[in-house]
View (tube, rainbow, N blue to C red):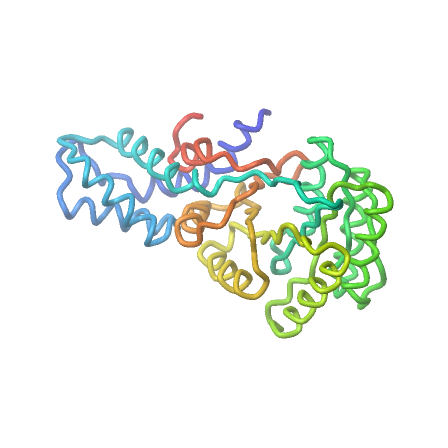
Length: 304
């Protein structure tokens, strides 16, 4: 199955939900204010968020359609969603020198963070970059073991210590070894304990200080992994982690398991942070760079 086929399948629940919410709202007649209000409410109910939904409603109203059927409405939605998504679609650029390019990956436990790190490592390997993983989530033995499994799976070295160990020390060892062996990218897992923000902030600050001593440019990226199944709660996570950890970009996972994929549009409109990649499956190849046109058409339920 091609990536576009997987993408279409991954967004099917989202497209079906949007279709249900829009069903019966257009009847090949001129759009009045009441119908436009209903369309806006349908978009909000589909997790596109109030800002994006209002923007799309205003765009539809400005076109002054004499007639509009459901297919036409979906086409307009795809166009407008693409306009929102296109400015934030930015592939991860492993540019940092001196090597390694350091990527901190953050997110709440259960968001798919550790799995995403393995898939992201594979994605960079496909671009001929050498990758090393660092198990900086030392508070969960399961996270350390899971990262080691992914390291074996993608044939990438993993720097790890004991449960409860010093995350900054792991990162320090990772940078030193990556530098010594000429690794291009060091991807660092971090703890995801939002319930103790002060402790997490202290830990991230310590990691940053260690990185700063080794390479003033590091970390080059701070990527927040979001679970699409949490819907609007993902927006709250972006706000908290952006303010707490200086998030530079997003990856959204589990889009294939939810009808709430519209939150991707809400995140783009509200925060404008780069979206580097999306995940639509469990396989190692199911994390791919974010393509706004394809995603917009998939959400709108149109063929790619």
